[in-house]
Image (tube, rainbow, N blue to C red):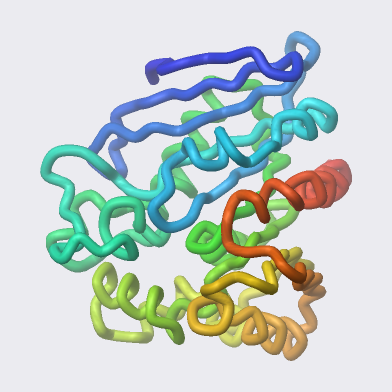
Length: 281
């Protein structure tokens, strides 16, 4: 692991790092904020998964999380959204919703993407091991959150790993990728046209198939231009109601899909996660 940069903030350290990933076969970059803490202390970890076109830098620079993470004693880890570099395939048309910046947190099975696009393994296995080895992280106390495509990733990762994360939340998540254009394109391109395989990467389908978490927090902008066609929070609401999952769905009037929206409600989410992390033995 190589340190790219480090900056003092709110008494803690905001770092950016890169390493050679075995999962993706590429160099991967991620950011970590470590709040002020006593020597030898182990701190809870929040995973933040970003959306389409983003890198680690979007939330790091615009998420406005450091003050509250310093107050609550939370490490925040922000990975990239896809492999990058020479030889990594992209959408042949140059579209933003597939390929570079759009890994959808799956392990691709379809050529040519199956060689590098292993974001599920990277996020759930490789990067956590790296964080545990190099930072004062208490890996017994983890929570996960994300935005848009990253909200999809956070929900599906939490649903398929019961007990690993103390809590899960999302901003404007893609809740049912198997039913919307963004998801159909991505899951078809990465996993093939056999839709049974898509269900393991679709939060609504996972809940319908028996996956469970205790509760979910979602904030959704009411003026989000992607709300009706791509995000469909009402599908998650129906699935959670049928499954008995406690869903808090906040529809925020006038807010869009941007980091102006995310930064407004970031502290609410971090406090919510901190309250649940504090109950982990």
